[in-house]
Amino acid sequence: MRGATLSLKGRALKYLAAREHSRAELIRKLSPHAESIDEVERTLDELESKGFLSAERFVESVVHRKAARYGSARLKAELVQHQLPDDLTRSVLNTLKETEFERARALWLKRFGEPPSTPADRAKQVRFLAGRGFSGEVIRQVLKGQDAPD
Image (cartoon, rainbow, N blue to C red):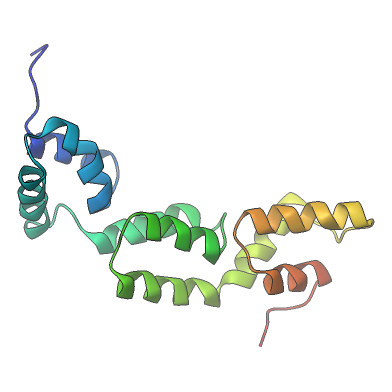
């Protein structure tokens, strides 16, 4: 079997067996192996119609893998990069915003566990949470030790 080449459909299924992929991601990965972009589109349309490729499952997968470690801004950037439907992205982000404080606090507790004692410590903690995509307001609440916002 050495040297045998996979069909586009075979390649797509191989990628999807490893993890969920977005349509845009599969287009990028399959294009070098196709004669035309139309061939790739037809293959992905077929996989979508059979339920092998799903934007909803992809979004759930990304959120499941990354929500505990990242804020809404970072997750939004990742989802936008994959050219997903706006309504799907919007609904997921609204749900994530409801748990933003809890996720930021859990991450902060795991990493630092106590309020900053110096301005340098505070800056370090702010940079850490901001780099993970949490909003400034959420970061301020976490560092003040407040309970969840009303």
